[in-house]
Image (cartoon, rainbow, N blue to C red; front, top):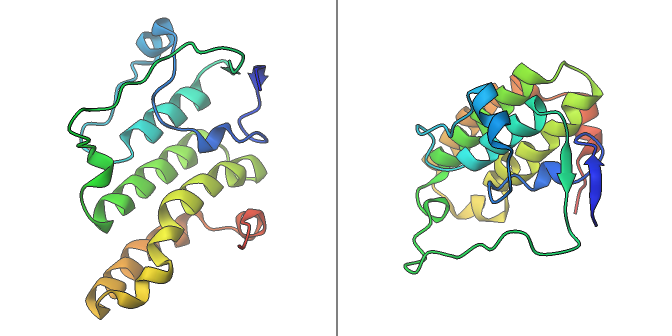
Length: 162
């Protein structure tokens, strides 16, 4: 649905953080925005969330095609490569950005749902029991500081259990 001004906190646009969007060049230049080249996965989510939070609004155009995405011929996506460490790096970066740019409270909690649901919680899905004890312990060690820093009871209430 086309929306002239989507609300970042109540809409689902927080779940569409790929960078395949049209950004105003003046916004990116004025804010000095660029992809974080240290991240091997999730750099697009970090970039897009920053644009959402620091920009003057988000419009959604759904009435017509305005962007054509062509996949790589070799289907060699970085997102498909690498292990769980990259996922935790991505979650840490996105959670840090949200914490830096959104004041504590319900609005921040609404944004934190995204990195928890998309990046962090899947690391502890059904496949976890098939992983070695060392991997499970490492994942718990990587998740603990993120939980300590960003988990709130309100965030917990916002998560849907399937």
